[in-house]
Length: 213
Image (cartoon, rainbow, N blue to C red; front, side, top):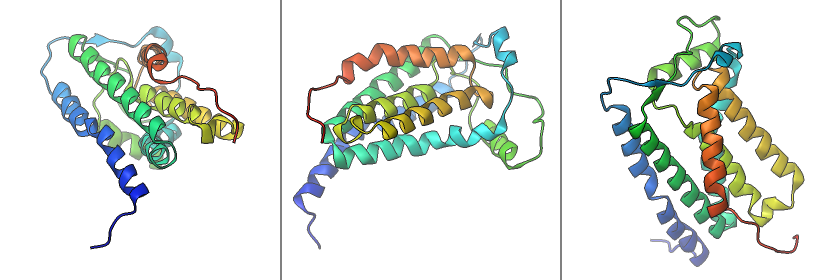
C-alpha cells in the first residue's frame, strides 16, 4: 500500500476540524422535522418590492461549491485559517439551529405559480421541493457565504491580492442577494445572517501583521 507523504498526512489530519459537519446536518434535519403549531413570518412589506429573478438560482446553488472550495483551498494553503473557518461555521451554524428551535420562523414569499417556463424556474421548483420555507431566520446561506469570504480574506495568500478579495466579496454578495431574488429568504433573514456574522467574526478572524508575499 503506498504511503502518504508527511505534508499530505498532516493536511488530512486537519479534516478532524470538519467532524462537526455531519452532526450539524443531523441537527438541521431534526429541527426541520419537529412539528410546530406556530411560526414567526419574517417577511416585511418591503419584501414585496423585491422581484423574483429565477436566474439567481445559479448563485444560490454556487453556495455549496463556494463553501467546499474555500475549505479545500484553506486546508492545503493555510491550515490555521482552515481551523478558523471550520470553527466559525460550526459556531454560527449551530447558533442558527438553536435560534430556529427557540424561535421557529417561516416566510410566505414563494410564488404559487412560477412566472416562466425555463431551466432556471425548473431549478427553483426543484429547490422548493427539497428545501422548506421554514427555519429561515437567520439565513445560513448568508452566514456561510460571508464566513467563506472572511476566511479567505484573512489568509496571506489572498489578503494581498485585491482582485481575489474583490471576487470573493462579489460572489458572497450575489449569494446573499440570490436568497431574496428566488424567494428563499426575506430581508429580515438576510439581516439576521449578517448580524450573526458581525457578532461572531471578531472571535475568529483577526489580521496578523505579516509581510506581503
